[in-house]
Length: 211
Image (cartoon, rainbow, N blue to C red; front, top):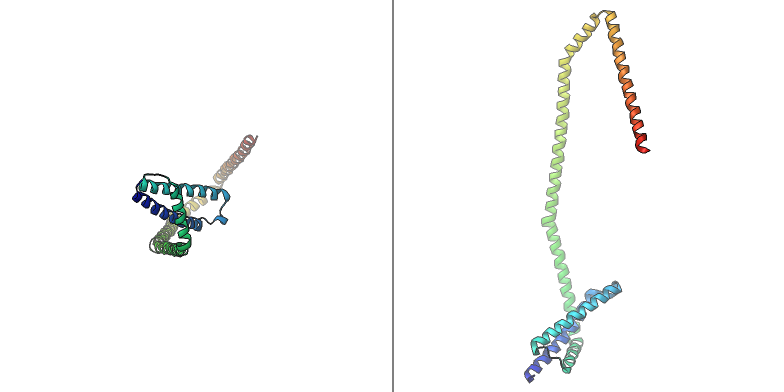
């Protein structure tokens, strides 16, 4: 391995050490360990270190074709120490500002979408429902009015027929009236018996279904 390659490797690994420090702070900021279950923390830790290992190895592969030397670990440690001493406070302030900016932007976009898209759609939907209900109410009122008008017209039309029937009933001889009334009562009794029989059959059928 040439001196140039070794120098590039050292610089790259110092950079990866700083990257590792920033990644650890970012990871800790978003994970919030005390609020997470232990198994969630464990799985996230495993995934985090696997990803960081792959990133460092890929960087090493690009710089010196993946040759692992002892000074690589020293360079990573130096980069991590440099981050902790010089860059950590600055990075954490920038990270908080970026998080605040992202949260504010998200809230602004959500509010804008709610005002410009969701609320007009809700208003339109409510207006359509009100119009439909109003139309149905109008049709129901119109139907009741027409039904009353039809009944009133039919009442007027059948009124002469009613009067004629009453007049004819008065003109019918009394013996014939008695016969008609007798048969009317007989039919009424027959219908009543049929209703009672139907009721009894229904009760019997229900008992059969329950048993």
